[in-house]
Length: 123
Image (cartoon, rainbow, N blue to C red; front, top):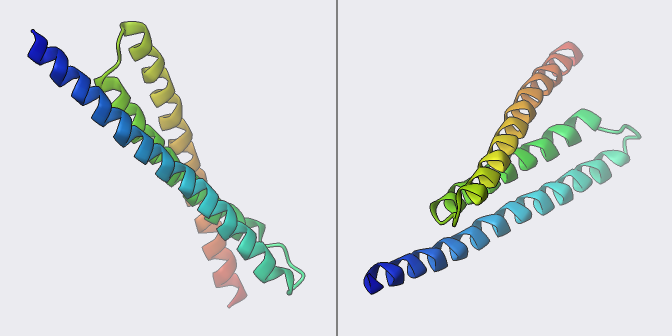
């Protein structure tokens, strides 16, 4: 019995470590996306046009990637959830993040098509 408790404790420690790494990557994605979007605005500021669609696509893509990492962290959390209540909360968070990611991806696809149409009409 003591062996199983030890294995469970080691598993919890590893999951906690990997969750921290994955969540840190998620934060880095958001920060990198923010700086990338700001850079895009500054670069296009010279031309006196605000590249709203470009900035939105760029930042939205990074947010979608960050949500994927957050979802991966949630999946890891379910392996060591101490109770059904905690598991239920994690499940609800995972569902919300999945829906957010799905609709964000759909919106980005529509905006990408719009951008391609604008580009082809300008040619």
